[in-house]
Length: 446
Image (cartoon, rainbow, N blue to C red; front, side):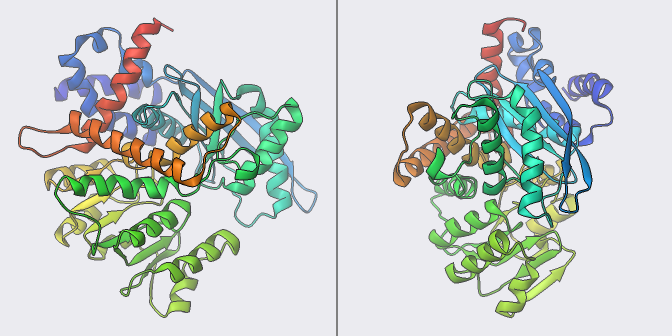
């Protein structure tokens, strides 16, 4: 079987040899799907995994704009439309200097499986730009977003491709992008999700990814007749996902002791409570400051240039960015007693780290399952837009919990081993694959 996986990857590497993040994402899925396809030959005959690994369409375009000094700036824009077998392309836009085609193809590939797991009719896509909103004025961000959408509008639509936010694309950016789309097209449609609740957005969309990853952990623990109460938790990141992960952990009785950003992490042994979380939200969302300010304000430790994986914990939430947790970090977590890792970010654990978790038989929740809450509520936002109706907070939250519970159930179905250990990574890959694969077979060679 190892030979079959290697032969498959050789074909993928021939076309995408320089795209390391994309190859990593494909390999992680291939480890589960190639053996599964050997026992289910229809998927092998139709070369479904090979087809999923090839985008249906990749768009690359120039984004010129004027800065506040009247100088011309030029960025590169992207949209990877990966797979539309079960619905319109759906996936976020990322504005960050690290954005390139490899990163976006990996994210789009992951999105195909994640969206499938939600049970909602959404294909997979991803886009963005190497533009960095940090340090830019509102006027500069608006000019960039308007220029970006002036090209992208040709390729998106409520029934074609529905982008959302991601790193660097929050409420401000979504607003500017939507305004430009509406201005060009002269129509008010659900072309973007993550909109403000006053103009077509869904309640609890900002909270959904963070809430969802905690709900997933709660389901994992429930199988062990356990809960989050009194668990010691570490979280990486300080953005949207981290903030609402912390909020839900506090609500469920856990003690959260870390938060981080690109400069380092804060260790607060007394735990982050509601007052401290409100400080973090104001610091990061309004003031756009650095997390070390928290350490100064609450007189706790800031560790510069490090990630929080050396801090002893029961549960770890890598919520920042891809490949932030490597094999050495994973071994340290396990040695320090961590028994559960749940990914709020996309592919934050390297393949080596994942193998450490699986060998140690700890609970490991892959991002495509654990952080699907965000796109799930985006899907619910699309439904509300189609109905021209808005559901209340409680109804959306109930639907979110139901979707996460269903995702957990199918991961258990496909991931349970003879020993009783649940390999959530394999379960998520196979469950996400089957729905898309069956749709692709039904629709022919397209």
